[in-house]
Image (cartoon, rainbow over all chains, first blue to last red; front, top):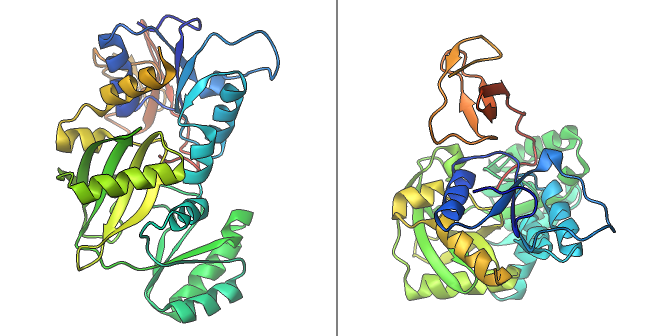
Length: 286
Length: 54
């Protein structure tokens, strides 16, 4: 029952994908009135009459627009899931890594340089193979595994030609020879909801790149680690990706603030959309 | 049922479809956005932006 703009809960979307459909389904099963906002129609005065919403489920897919959406709504007193602070941290791989390292959490060895020359020097110290990633990006785009200096020089030259100033922030990680899979948990507040493996023969194991999913047991270690990661980036509704070393050691790879979860729902049979709705209702006290 | 704005093929709209949902034309594989359900209305889906993700 989407009831128009006066509902206390709003859901903002870029596209209506499986995840957003399941969120709408969950709201309607619970008879929660909500307002569906399309980001393309959004405009908001910075100081005007009060907005009608108490809470926003922010499903904006743009890593540029999403933090501004959150800031706009927060400035008008709306509880946004996830908060602008969480989006700012999780939307930037360097800021995520800094938060994780400062919290003493295990991550792949990471270095950052601001010029190709400095990056090559860092990689010489770092060792090959290594992985270059854009600090802002998703779905496995523009990840590069470089096996030697020649490959690194080529990728760094290409990054310069791409032109975006963001490509001059060069984020480098050690390559983890993981066992054909990575691991994702979903955390809602202080609850680890579910976990899955993502399997792929390719070293990139994003479901957006064709990885398949199976359920994973939530061990005490995995639960504790997941909650520490969530706390380190500011909490909220998060999908946390882990890599495994050959000896089974878990490393935090990244934290997603606008998580896709249809693969998780299929693998675990957990109704992530309904749990997300319940979490937002609890936090917003609706 | 509606027609693809790219190739005019007939595109079926499922009963649980939502406004804003993306469907694919079975003939030309173009991504289409559902603009309306009653009557069904389709348009070319917006391009995926470089900064989109999860």
